[in-house]
Amino acid sequence: MTTPKATTHVTQNEALIFERSQTGRCGYRLPALDVDETPIDELIPSNLRRDDDLAGVPEVSEPDVVRHFTRISTWNYNIDLGMYPLGSCTMKYNSRLNERVARIAGFANLHPLASERDAQGALEVIYELQQHLAEITGLPGISLQPAAGAHGEMTGVMIIRAYLDARDGEASSKRRVMLIPDSAHGTNPASAHLSGFTVKTVRSTPEGQTDLDALRDLCSAGDVAGLMLTNPNTVGLFEKNIREICRIVHDAGGLVYMDGANMNALVGWARPGDMGVDVIHLNLHKTFSTPHGGGGPGSGPCCCTKELEPFLPVPRVVRGGDGFKVDYDQPESIGRVKAFYGNFGMHLRALAYILTHGRDGLREATEAAVLNARVIAEGLTSDYERPFSDPPMHEVVFTDKRQGRKGVNTLDIAKRLIDYGFHPMTIYFPLIVQGAMLIEPTESVGRQEIQQFVEAMRAIAREAQEDPELVRTAPHTTKIGRLDEAAAARKPILRWKPEEKSATA
Amino acid sequence: MANIPEDLHYSKDHEWIKVEGDIGTVGITDHAQHSLGDVVYVELPKVGDRFTSHEAFGSVESVKAVSELFCPVAGEVTEVNETLNDEPEKVNADPYGAAWMIKLRIDGGGEVDKLMNAAEYEDYIKAEAD
Image 1: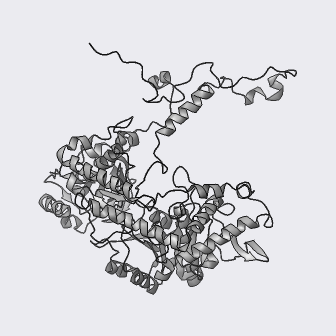
Image 2 (image 1 turned 30 degrees about the vertical axis):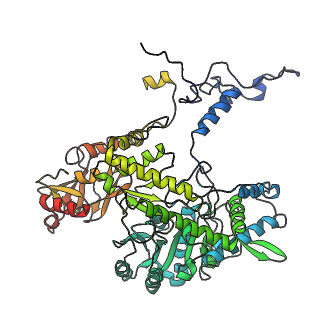
Image 3 (image 1 turned 180 degrees about the horizontal axis):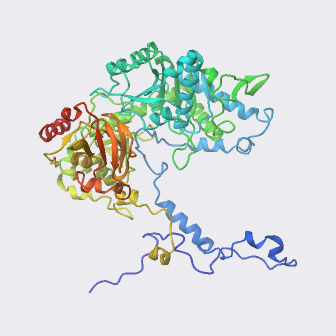
């Protein structure tokens, strides 16, 4: 005889809000009408009204709505719950202090069309942040307008193009090749392509560095506008030859763009401007601790040399008179790339982060980020294949080569990590590493949590040897097990439909 | 072990080509589909497009990544396998048959002879794995 099972409740799965709908249920009660009723036709013509009594809109009470969304929110994994070791994403903690600063009424309620005179405090914040970022990157020209990393990238590439047009005139049209290493972020070729460049790939050496001979060879054609380089690169290694790389590109008449996504490994220790880089974008939502994911919004300032400064987007926020002013008088500018001044709330948070840490604190944060990645590199080398032996910077890449012999691949390992309570790492990126697992702990995790992560990964490596099926079918502790990701991509269901309709559809 | 038919030619980019007269049928190898994982989308060129050897003629998206498809020899596209639009899973199920991707009128110049045969391709993927 089987034990009768009670109907499951909230610890189990949660229906969609549409499925919770009960005809006639609602979350409000209006008071009796105490004025004369006006016929609705006199207020809204019938051709502008729905006639289906809002069919399909869920009919739910207030507690239904609150509990529904609260339950779902508890299933979420978030940066306040635990580490988020996504490589090349720098998912660091977003401090409460930054949030508090961003909510100061004078900033939060300031209208974007407020006059220069009324917005002096906000302009000062923008100016201050510009000064700090210029010092951190060693690049004095700066615009905070771009709304995200790829946007900052495209702004940088447009600046390169405008500069070359001004420098070379007609001959600039012959420089339309952008060089990009094969380890680059996918947004780099997209930014170059959108700005009218043809992309050529620079291969990496077996040690994970940009191949200088391949670079020289590509530069010899005379059609190179520039190089887009990430440093540290996406396999987590510092480009040791960065000065030589910049020299080769400059000697060929091109400029060097640095993708600043991995700046968390450099802040306070090394400056792209000193390496010979001409233009860079920063991700405030990575390196400078503003929220990342969930729509952010992001912020991708663009920093450049004095030579490129005239081409930055307008308006520029500059010192003027007794205070700060918005300067549109920049005839060589590429123009505006974003409404108003960029995502100002993020500028506040980033400035709060920089001022809270100070010079020494920022150096320490960088140190801790690199140290944490190295602790993971050290802790996992006995169990996972590490394709590059140089000490990693802020992130480290492993592969599934050893586990692959038992039929366990990177996706399986990432899914199993969920069972251990961790958010998975970045998988299958960078593309040059077969079965890549890219791990970036950031400085926001302490030693205990790093150790737990290492232990979880080692436990999975043991399971892959002893019970590969357990790993192949993970996750096992989640409300929904392994999803059919291929079917979801091939035949996506994009919206809920009432059952009776979907049955006949 | 990957399936490597004897009657095809292979490129270092893991495409195969089957030559019949001056027409070549092109697809990706069993090894390639296995490395990519479940294929979810295939983007192919139009009839009449021309490609040189090693030029990207389309792309294939799997649950892991988007990868470019490289033309093994130069030629003009004469036919495109439209069924892959709706059934990209064929690339995993039958890479040498139902999932052929394009047919090309092959330019002269003996590029086919520079491609690998089955035995050479087998050695090539073995070497790549090490």
